[in-house]
Amino acid sequence: DARVTQTPRHKVTEMGQEVTMRCQPILGHNTVFWYRQTMMQGLELLAYFRNRAPLDDSGMPKDRFSAEMPDATLATLKIQPSEPRDSAVYFCASGLVSLSGETQYFGPGTRLLVL
Amino acid sequence: AQTVTQSQPEMSVQEAETVTLSCTYDTSESNYYLFWYKQPPSRQMILVIRQEAYKQQNATENRFSVNFQKAAKSFSLKISDSQLGDTAMYFCAFMKHDSWGKLQFGAGTQVVVTP
Image (cartoon, rainbow over all chains, first blue to last red; front, side):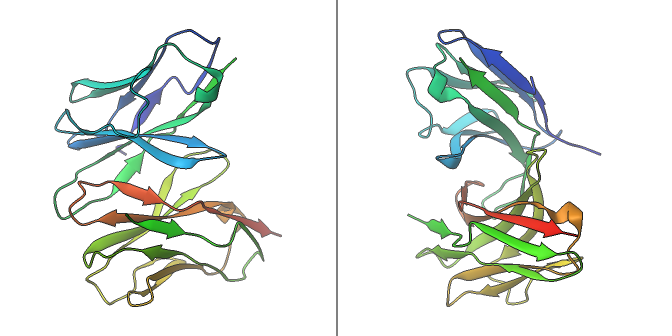
């Protein structure tokens, strides 16, 4: 049963610390998405990659957030330095996307709390 | 820009009954995809059902079915024979045909199934 995995599942850190979240997409999927979910803003798309190349990261605060795909089996989202307003659930999703569209499958999320 | 509106913040339904969730969207596109995702208390985002705009037939997935009205830009979800496990937040989402999988989500509707 193929699924997207994310680590860690929970993270509590202090303001100013670096946070790295990891995602393993479903094998064979060519697109990876990072979302953030908060009560106030709902689900927001932060960034996404196709074939490991960034397609759009306009939803991401550039000064402190960075997203990469070092290889096809790993995507990372890094926050440095973290702030309390970054507290949220961060989801990774993957899909086999083409111009005809496709379906995204979500990981379980990383719940981040910045104190 | 597309917007997705879910006008019902919360709905309650008794076990075995039927509940219908509304979703409207605003777009000038003619070719697109619509989705319903379910998010139970575990926070996992689970795909419920998908509809291609070019298909007139409404999608069905077991107890879940949609009423897709393209002219009205409406995409409602019907849950039949509701079960306790259907208790979750339900998100409607829109994807443009040529957006490489970029989803836009509504604010969500909390469904509570009571015994």
